[in-house]
Length: 399
Image 1 (cartoon, rainbow, N blue to C red):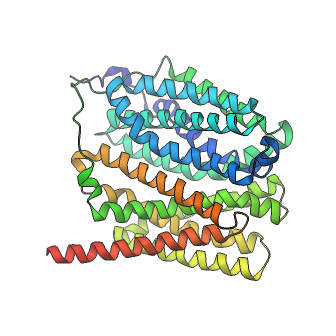
Image 2 (tube, helix red, strand yellow):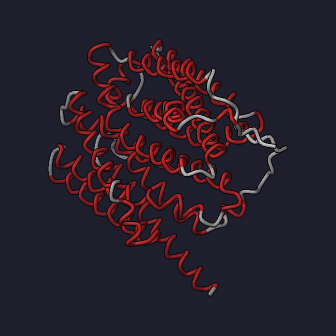
Image 3 (spheres, one colour):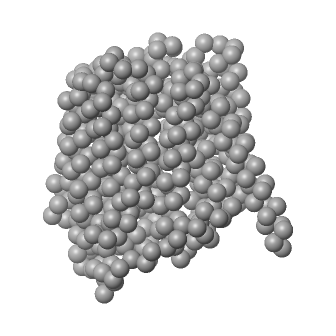
């Protein structure tokens, strides 16, 4: 007997109004904070490298939460994980607004990411529970994908305006208020959807980790998302500190990359139909290599500007869209009977690679230059191309 029932008999607009805020907040907490990143070392009395860790910590915890909170939601239910995660996110956000030193700020940033991860996992698990066999699932996932494109465009602009008029602390106060309102809206309406069919079967991750196809596409996803992560980790220092942009000018320049992402996404299905998963992935890697070359040339030949730093990212964003359009399907294609576990491993590995390798690129190379982006994108693209070639040889040997 399942608990999916009349309790989730909402119309699609009402369901989206209930679910979307938690997806938005998880992404917004990363992007709205970017305009004040250059000022945070002075505010917290720490180094730029330590402030970089607040971005990386959030990214890593968001991914690790897939492994931690997914099984918890299977055991105790989606509703308590969502409500608990939303409350933790709100409390941590208000705590961040009150922070004045580095260690409490780092700890609260970790808790904020944990709350975001819990709410995100419970949201996607609910979508699977309620809409797995219904056409509405396509609309919901499409909307969530659009949110991932729009938030990077609008979040930094909102953060810059808040910081300029109300101070940096207002950014985290607003996040706390939005999370609190989302929880209050969900409390009487978010009904439990976890199927009541006995204990969840435990599955081994070994078949997933042994699949070369899984690694090819998961590494491709890591290359794409990591390139964007290193971009927004370095962009504030490059454009604000070196190029002299104001916080609002930086936010508008940053938003142009997100606009390119949105426009390219409109045509992604056509490219995938034309080239297939493998062809689209390899073209995405080739575009990342081209963009990294242009970034390197811009760094060597001219001062940082819209044309030498941001414009090459427009090209790389096209490669990112090509790549993420096919990586989920490519990585999970073999695991229809254990898709939930495969999704958790897929996101967890991606977050760990992006958080660790991306952070090392920023810390080891000059974090106020284009070199971390160029190096990360080129290295990861080369790895993906090599693993794809290995996968092809393996497939040929089996025939």
